[in-house]
Length: 66
Image (cartoon, rainbow, N blue to C red; front, side, top):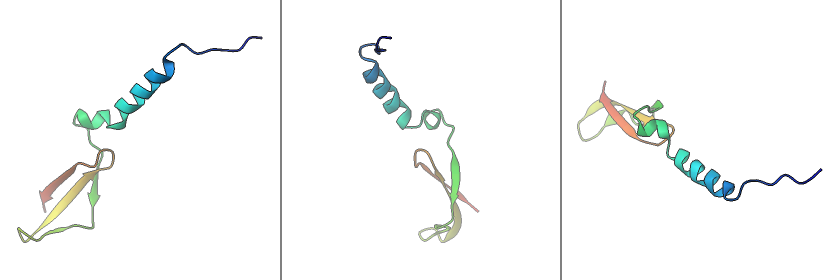
């Protein structure tokens, strides 16, 4: 049996696809994976309770008053 060879440049294409997926393609389309950050629940500047949500994939933050 002979040795199986891959297509030339296939590793470069794999690297490009991996880099593209790295940023979280769902997040770029607006489908974040929100999780509540319980460490910061009080906004010092406004003096109000807030809910801080952070995306676990891309790290984007969103705040809402409680």
